[in-house]
Amino acid sequence: MKTSAIASLSLTAVLTLAGCATTPKPAPEAPAPTAPQAAVAPATPPTLPAVPLKEPKPMELVVQAHPDTPIVSLRFVFHTGSVDDPKGKEGLTALTAHLMAEGGTQKLTAAQLLEVLYPMAAELEVHPDKEFTTLTGRVHKDFLPRFLDLFTDVLLAPRFDPAEFERLRANALSAVRNGLRSENDEALGKVGLDSLLYAQHPYGHYSGGTVQGLQSLTLEDVKAQAQRVFTQDRLVIGLAGPVDEALQRTVTTRLSGLPASGAPRVALPPISTEGGRVLILQKPALSTAVSMGAAVPLRRGDPDFFSVAFAMSYLGEHRQFIGVLFNELREKRGLNYGDYTYAEHFSEDPGTTYHRPNIARTQQDLTVWLRPVVPANALFATRGAMYFLERLVTQDIPQDRFDISRGFLQGYTRLWEQTDQRRLGYAIDSLYYGTPHFLDQYREALAKMTPASVHAAVSKFVHPDGLNYVFVTEDAQGLAQALRSGQPSPITYASPKAPELLQLDQTLISLPLPVRPDAIRVVPVAEFMEK
Image 1 (cartoon, rainbow, N blue to C red):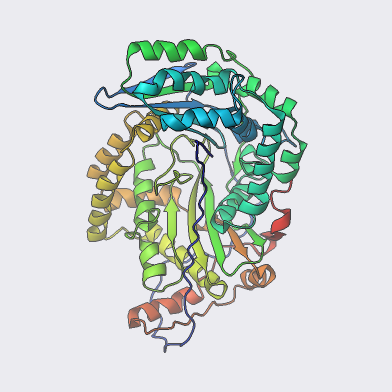
Image 2 (cartoon, one colour; image 1 turned 180 degrees about the vertical axis):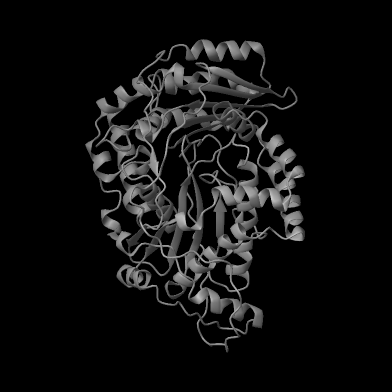
């Protein structure tokens, strides 16, 4: 959420529906790659241990000085998030962060804080996540002394106003009930996938909380949580712009007023890599959203990470037209709006199409999402995504397509670091992953990759039969029955299609999905993230 003199929230939903008017004559069946078979539950599902992230020293400074710019950027990253929510109080860390950042200081009410920020054209934002909470600020250097007092006061002297607590808790409850459950099926599917992959794990609940968890919270809970987790030993300080040694000393001196330490780090448990599980979230909807994913023993710093990240970008980078899934499912078949794949957990940086920095995770997941599909075509689209994912595992990327994707990423990664805030974010992430100059390393790795080397890495870490599935749809029981039976999913088009496309469709229509009939669960959306 953003704190400024004028705050606004815009939600744009785009839904592209495929037509169903004519049925072209099918062409002969095309050969397919080895298809995943129906999943069978292992006797003892394998698990992945939690290998802790690296720990910077308390209040470590990351400085990127640019004397030629008048804008100062501050980025305070705390190693705390929803994993620190006590059982039954889900949402506590996020609510604490928002109340500190938006609820005023001891000197200023929340309204007065906005009034002071307005003439500075200053930004003050907070972003809680699973393991990290980030407080960002941006201001012209002429207003820096006053802004710095405000920016540090929200941490050192929060107002903890009872009325603001109730307001922000009501906002958080609304975000679950009216936002997550009702308005944003894409986000709902992603949160559902977290709950499926990380059942009985601190990652399993929505970082914004659950209904009953939020209802249980008190102002005293929030005050105690601030002392437990917003501490010096969990903090990295990022400064960029016209930063000198005096500013560095001022910031570190002021923040030494935080508690030196608090609660111990949460010990994350191993996670199951069992595949074939399905969660269907039932709600009134004109479309079906599909999310697929698996926990993987891969994260930044692994020698194969860049190769797998490249392969997932080749399949589908966020809102880019170059991806295989985007072209095959959206452009050629008109099935939906977007089709994306990721080698690590993705959360969009607000106002961009890029990965948000400082959402590092100890345990990572590989994901595929298909944005809204006509319900009648949901299984066909899912089968299509599985087909092209399986082909990536069984075949080298063609050299011409490989070169196009590599050229795209060599330029596109430059956009990921185009602002001081994003550069600070990547530098701070690198402290935890042990990946200095991460984006430079990525581009150097891209220059050395070959289709064979990428295929070798993908074969190690991408296993389509290990995927789990979340569907957000209205006819949940009908979808569940179709998944259990494995019945074909024929498709019709409103306009003529190329013979080779229709030929491939005959393969996709009956492609086996690796789901376990005994592991398909339907949950009414009103019950999801309730407790």
